[in-house]
Length: 134
Image 1: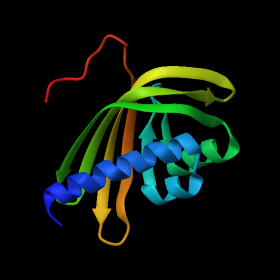
Image 2 (image 1 turned 180 degrees about the horizontal axis):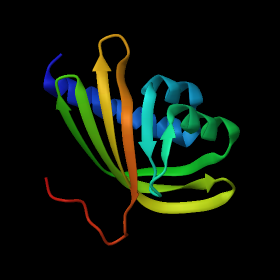
Image 3 (image 1 turned 90 degrees about the vertical axis):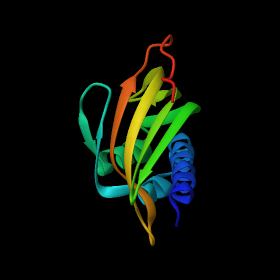
């Protein structure tokens, strides 16, 4: 597979992830996240794949909007990075949340499983901040 093909397939994986988050589709999320993956939240907390799946399965995290504003993709061999910028709305632990967020996700690729997240970081972005020029 060529790098351009990998970039397209990574972009598709990122968008499948967004759809799975919106639907709280735990099976789809499970297939897109490596078992050892760790996530850094906007508050600095570090969560595991198990934590993330439990938040969706239990209803602790329910997304009502995931709207992509900007998506950057970088592929180097079997490693990829995505930078998502967009608006998220939903509830977390019963509290309403609406925020413009930047997610940086590191992915690995293998020919059998496709792209899977190994690490991610989320940051709340001020409304006036524009995406950097490429």
